[in-house]
Image 1: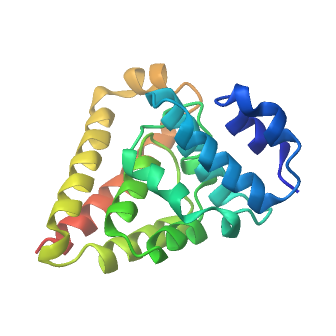
Image 2: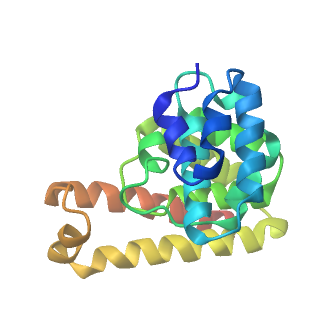
Length: 202
């Protein structure tokens, strides 16, 4: 059964196709129709964010949708939209299994893009998710051949960490749901990701 909230996550961007998609009963057919429709819609940043947000929700959803995601759907990650507050597909929907699935697709550019996107906003990752990320960084981004990918991720992390320097008032204004005591723990996670990337560069 295709979860209703995920239907609307995609349908909101593709209103012209709502009637056809709503009556699609097969999950595989629904997925194929979804990604075909997405590719046919004139590209905008908003469309890209909606597609990628829905993709990450599906990938992290506990109802078993992940195996039904068409391989081509993952390529939307390479557009690297930034999913800020209000999008469900980043830290809240990230699982260790999703990270491993992205890596198993065997495309370093896609794995880099996946991390880039889920690091769009500050947020907590569970210990299991952090461990999975660190393992992927160590195994996927070591060696000369991964230098460009490391540099891109380090640049992204440098930007995120620089935002913590604005002080609590700046952070609270942008992310009012966070408590001041949350910030050191969030910052520590991103510092650890960067540290392991830097170690892989030596």
